[in-house]
Image (cartoon, rainbow, N blue to C red; front, side):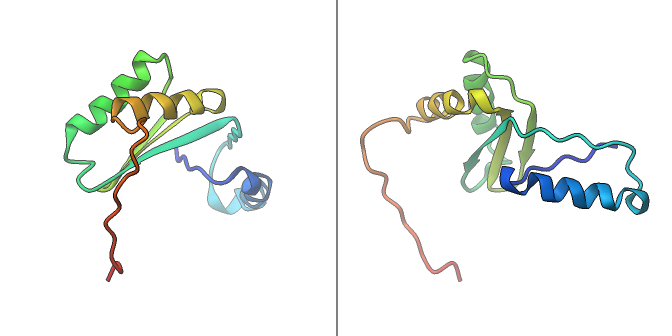
Length: 114
């Protein structure tokens, strides 16, 4: 089985050392580290259950020639990992696909979160 996770680039060396230091007790066979990736996330209610959102996201990236290396979903978030040199283009095409690339200021409705 493979386990993948992302973390801030600035924490990479520290986490690699901690993992290597504990290799004997954790039982993993190999470790791979890649600091040339970028993560893009769509956040909103019902992400997992609204198939149209993920289809639109994946189609936009595919049509722009951007390879998705990893996908993660939760009830409120769809995250994709791409190469670092394509992340800016990925943001642009996803903004365009979801009509977020205009000049209009978004209205935010918030609360206390309680």
